[in-house]
Each structure stands twice: as structure tokens, then as C-alpha cells.
Image (tube, rainbow, N blue to C red; front, side):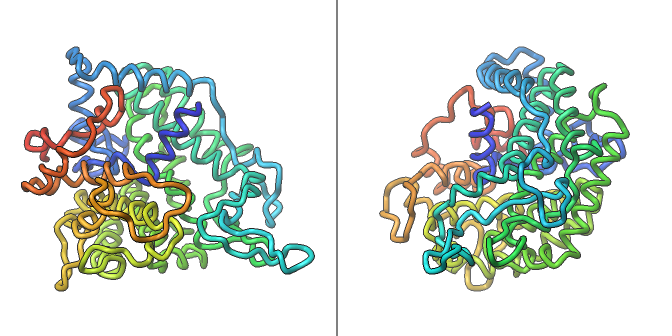
Length: 420
């Protein structure tokens, strides 16, 4: 199970996102082309990968074996629920999601420690007293693992377990989560929840993709599909209309980016193509033009104590939005403001530091991880196929043959045959 959680945590800020299925949604959650209806995964590539597995492509065997190993471990986990936490939200309803702000600590200048004060980048272990965030992330990662294993192997055992976990988190009256984050990332002595807490549900974008992978399973029913669509419809409405949701939408840094990722992804899941397109179109002026300098720096992330991690995290979110943009006909990959701000510039700025060619000049507490930019580099190479990117890729380590990334999307060398 620890392995699954590690995979999930990696995926949250360096997602293996390489494309989208281009077909319109259908009531059965399956794309008309036969590819799975997914949004942050490449449906057509997944379909081709499954065919290669069925045809006995031995090059994929290590990745399939590792995925199945992870899925078998997942069979003995859960179910997961917000009602399992020991503390109760201010509403008195354990079905409400609840968490504490991770970077806030007791005030040393007051007798009771209140109000808590901010120590950016330093995680207060007290947040572990409330399990909702950890439990939700584990649920999302486990469901994705099981759904992928079902899709590639056809073994309904995996789909049945994924269905059980989804029903427990979203549908079962005894254990389901209410579709809101009113009490997320509360600060002791200050408030009972904040808009910033919405970043904690970014893993739910994995869930809506997993649902598409479960289509066709005898375990996943039409009632399940309707139930999840109803839950996400209510959650998206809460995101758009609540005070906390609107505050997060207005955030200028990575929080705003990941709000857009969630809102657009959920809109596509619900068949709201025009809403998703509207959200993605605002990225030109609301995110890229505001977040990225002409030289590629991201000032709102560079002021953090983990400037490298946050710069890469926000870039990853922008690339996720670019993937969603592909599905609605909005090109974020090649967009550039008149003074040169763009996703590509943001990546170009980070690459030399990841490759060790330059020393990072900003603060980065908690250790240096150059590989944080590698997935963005590989993903960009599928969109920017010019000589500079081919040269950059040659400097990266080979992806391990057992890495599930080999099942999810094309390598840069495959890009010509992978274009849709």
C-alpha cells in the first residue's frame, strides 16, 4: 500500500498526463471511438496499449506486472471514508470533509498558542490528527491503480474493488462525503476552513478518469455512473458558488491553477464542454500572463520557502490545463503573450537547474529534487519537437521498464504515430 501512496503523491505534482480522448461524452461514459472516456490521460493511447498487451508485446510486460502487483495490494485496502476521522467538523456532521492548514503552528507569544501563525513550508504534524486529506488521496490513487489494472487486463476483480471504494466514498449514505470543502485547511484560532483547502481535492481528477476506465465492467453500473455524476455536479456547483470556492478561483498562484484543473476536468466529466472551454480560455490571461515572467520565472512560486517544488508544481498544473485545452480546442501549449510569457518559457527557465547546469538561486527547504522537472520535460517534448528539446531529452535518465508511465502515454520518439 505504501507503494501506491508514493505513486499517488508523485502524480499530484508531476502527473503522467499526455493527452485526451477527443470524442464527445456519452451516457455510458465511453468515447464513441472505443477509447475510454478520460480527460487527463490519453484515451487513444490507452486503447492502443491495451491492444499491444493483448497482442503479446513483451516490451510492456514489466510495466503490466508492476501495475498488477500494485493492484493486488490494493485489493486488501479500504474502504475509505471521511466518516472514519476521530474529530468532528464544526457542522457536527462527519460526512463533511475536514483538514488543518499544514503550515500553521502554535503561537509562541500566547498562553494557549492561539491564533496559529504561519511557517511556510514547514508541515505541522498536528495535521495528522484529521485523516480526511490522507484518506482521500489514498482512495484516489488506489481507485486509479485498480481501474488501470482492470482496463489493461480485463480482470473484473479489480473493477469490483474500485467500484466498492467509489461507492463508499461518494455514494453510501453511511460513509459518503458531502460535496463541499467548507472545513478544509482550517487555521486554529482564526477560521474553520479556507478556499485554499480546495487544492486538497486535486486528486479527484484521477477519480473521474478512473470512472471512464471502468466503463464496460459488470461491476460498474448505470446507477453508479449517475450517482458519481450527481456528486460531481453538486461539488462543481459548490466550487463555483461558495465563498471558499470563489476565493480559490481568484487565487493568482498555484492554487488558482489547480482550481481551474479541477473545475475544467469535472466539467468535462459532466459533459459541460462549453464550461470547460470557458475555464481553459481564461488561462491565457488569468494564469499564464499573471504567473509567468517573460524570462520564464514564476514569481508567485519563487517567494515560497520551497520555490523549486512550487515552481514545478504550478508548471505541472499549467500543463494539465493545456492537456484539457486540447480536448476543447484551446491551445495553451503554444500561447505566448506579446512580451513572451508562456508555458514553454516557464519550462525553459527550470530545465538548466534540473539538469545541474545552474545552481538554484532561491530558497528550497526540505531537500533538492532535480527530477521534479523531468516529467514536464518529457511531456513537453511531445509538443515541442524541435532540436533543443531533443537535445534536452538525451540528458535525462531512461524511464524504468516497469514504470507505469510506459503504459499511459507515448515516449517522445513515438510522437508522430501518437498524434491524434
